[in-house]
Length: 112
Image (cartoon, rainbow, N blue to C red):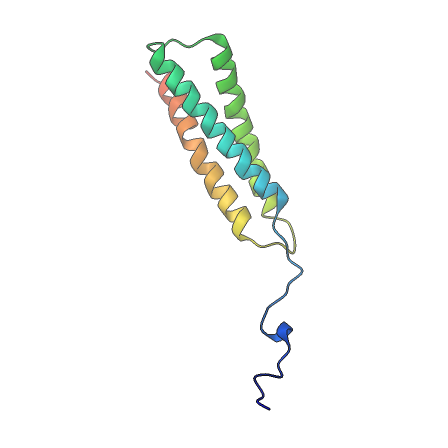
């Protein structure tokens, strides 16, 4: 018999006790929701010629604050042990990139 046929299936695969980080996944989901709210706010602002209602304004501020929380969740998820680091790194990068439009709007809104 050939030695290749006698190898166990476990030798072909690499098993690990590491897992994916749930807080990192939550951070990505929060960032996606924040970007959707941002797009809705921009569309409503364009429809109203720069004037948006109180409800949309409150939603925008709430989404901005939630985006800040998302960044902190992503930072904390990188400190977990025995996890795959791809998702926490992606969550931190995506959260920071999702924060840029909010930062731009608020800085341009404050500075004439």
